[in-house]
Each structure stands twice: as structure tokens, then as C-alpha cells.
Image (cartoon, rainbow, N blue to C red; front, side, top):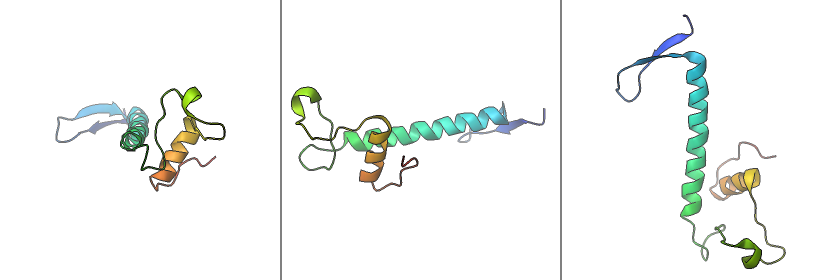
Length: 90
């Protein structure tokens, strides 16, 4: 039972959790928070005054040569536009 620890959160009553489970959940939480911050930032951008915005129906709205990043490229582009250092520049 040496890997079981008592954790308390924001003044709440403590709970016993395996340390490995806690570290895994903490990592997942940090990843989800970063995604939420990206989404909130992207959502606040306006098409006519921002370096990046969202386009509906891109097959009809985006002209040839336009850049429409997705997945990791979108994360890196948003991080760069937010002046953050991308975690995975590849």
C-alpha cells in the first residue's frame, strides 16, 4: 500500500488514490485544459481582424492555396498565434 496516498482538492475532504492513477489523471487534466484554452482563444477570434479564424463549408469558402490546418498542425498554429511555445513542433 505504499503507492496509495491521500490527496485533497480545493479544501474538499481527502481521498485515497493510487499514485500512478493520480499522475495519469493529472496529465490527462493538463492536456484537456490546454485544449480548452486553445478552443477558447480560437473561438474569440474574428474573421476580419485576426490572424486565424474558423471557416464554415471550406470546400466552397476557401480558395486554392489557402492554408487550413487540422489536428497537430492546428494545435501548433494556434499555439504560435497565441505566442505560446508549441510542445510538439514536429
